[in-house]
Amino acid sequence: MSQSYVTTNVQVGDSVGLPEPVRDLAERLRLRACETTGAAQRELESGQRDELFLLSTLGFANESERIAKDLRTLLTAYAHAVASERPSLQEVASWQRVTPGNLRRRYAPTHVEAIRSLLSDRVSFDLVEIAFASVDDEMLREASDQSRHDYGIRSDIRQACTAFVDETAEVLHGKGWRERTFVESRFDPNPLRGYSGVSALSMGSDKALAQLSPNLIDHALARLGPEHAHYVEFERHAVEQAGVNLSEQR
Image 1 (cartoon, one colour):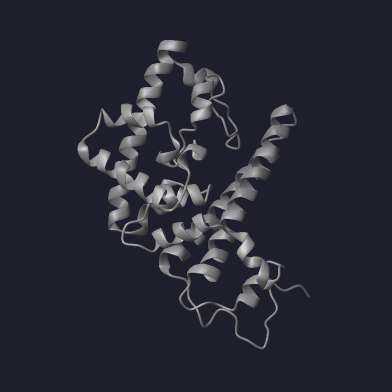
Image 2: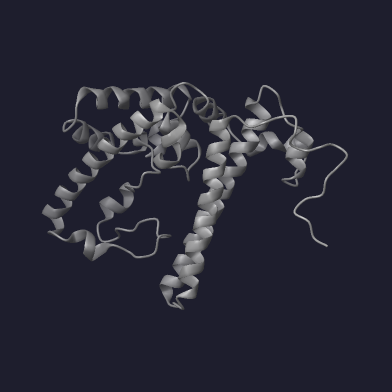
């Protein structure tokens, strides 16, 4: 008879609990993985078997792998490098089918700094999103009252960026350019393929503000107030302090 796991002579999971911010993000990533699988199933049941089916299947495989890797890295880095009271590293490793010595190869210093930010008084959305590529603003929104406030500021900046891109694209391609270029599958990484500038930009909320063009951010900030500019500086400083090379992130 199959079992989801086999108990040992040690009661797994009783001695160490995850901090709420880490547990919450892990739950959201796990839920996102389930939603991704559901979307893929609906596309499969639609009966489409053309080239888009091939490309969408590749997109689904990539997105699923990205989420799963982020989830594994988040929990491994926390358990191995951040937790003040470590869980059994033997168990952490065995559930991943690796040796305890290989755990350190499953995360980088950026992941550790991102988790520490997640546990701090003010979360750097950018740092967490750079470290964990499938995390978006919505996943971090409820981390604290400060995070809810920062989420609103980020939304303002993203909307200002989108407005500027829309205005530019309308000049180049005419009104209605989005409707003419949008790709239906949620697994397409560049859903606005008719305009390469937008495709490369990736306006989704899972892309850190620090990864966007500084010129675009400057145009957005010109439409907003000083609080938004101060927030962008906070994020840039947090990312730079973590040793992230911003030029490699764009």
